Length: 515
Image (cartoon, rainbow, N blue to C red; front, side):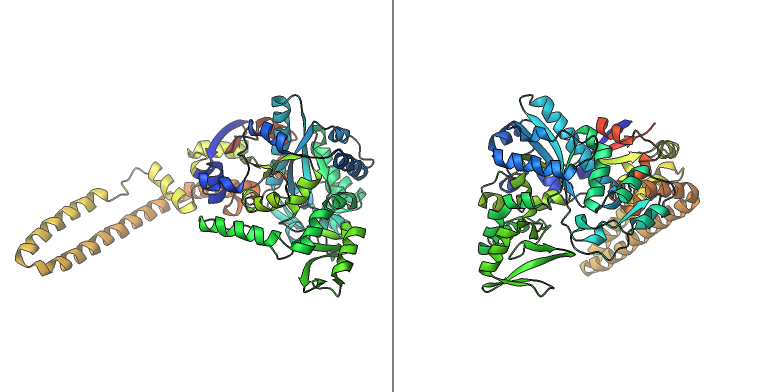
């Protein structure tokens, strides 16, 4: 594939906080540790503390979770003291969800490869932190394939990773063709977490990618000190709120809002917030309530029943993994910048924050259409109105601007004003008013000229907008709505091409053009 690159700042698609982080604004330095360069990973290795006991627990959990899966990655390597990981995470969207989820995984894999080359005395493993405890089912129960949306209907509630696969059978039956990988995943596995682990391993396990399900009693045991502190002291909400106020004072919008107590209670078909009311703890939307002693006893006996929310999830991740970096998208990395204070509070190393690769994939048919129309991929990032006008002005043989005419009128009114002032200075307002009316009339005439010429080229303009609609579905980036199957079913080498072309430390948008 041909690769072109655009600075993210030129696309109009990314938040200012991410752009300014990448530009390394000094005002943002207090909100993260080090900027993610290849050299910074050497320093991060020195900062990361991870015990032998935690390593053994991690390997035991992974061996149990992978069970009898064939061709699983080398899990035992994580027991070695010189092994570290780089991590990305996401919800368990069905059929992999939007394309950018695959981009996150490929970026993480390629970052581990780059680090293995740069630091041969260490080993680096890419990890996919599966958001199995997330309970927002509406965000993961659908995907788009060839312009049609498919939806999984189920009455199950609570942590999505625990959900059984009832109802996905009908989605498989609706698809335009049989997908053996997902047939095996959704028909033969027990839960959504099992299915995702299976198909991700089939797609990327050979690249060393490890899938970790955090909904695990052994892993939660490692987080008990943090969760106990949260139950007793509720310090994290105030810390994050203070950081949020500081970022807002710099003009940035916050991504997450902390709670006074940042834990959920997890059970069968249940994931609800824990709230503290005096010396009692209550589980919202249930009849469950605990005294202080009862809640601490519950935590000691059943840590798996406690689930970190968005504020504490990153702390959980850094507690149970020998992690150096988190690879995230344009909404994730800004919220990580709200969290450094709680890492300091718990005396944990704050990971390097690495933006995932961003890409626009242009297949051969669209590439030919672009060439025929004479439009560049960079121009297609303009909004429809600007794109249409820019294109028509390029191809028209007629003059559509009235700049010279405006200049002539300006000169005429300057002369008129000079004459009027000699007669009566109070006439200045009248002359300026007439001048404004005339210039406004010329502006309107110019707009009508352009619209008329756009109608003259309606066919080719419609072809241009149809091309943009294909590459920017729903007016947004392709990666945010298209599913990877849209490309993989036509090109079984699609993932391998991404693995070749993605550079995990190149923080620009890639335009990948198939020739």
